[in-house]
Length: 73
Image (tube, rainbow, N blue to C red; front, side, top):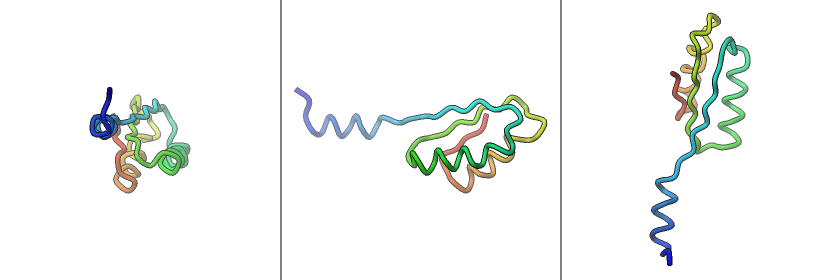
């Protein structure tokens, strides 16, 4: 039988990571990240950018500093 303390500990450890692959999504990354954050405020977000020439990664990183829990790779 699982105790309440064990369930609470498992919940504290469990995290959700949303992975978003991008390529030339500079104009879309702001609204997407804001929508994810407003819908699921506790998730971690990882932007995986393939060296977009439109600098999608830079825009995502800047927004990550403002919203928090957003990383760019």
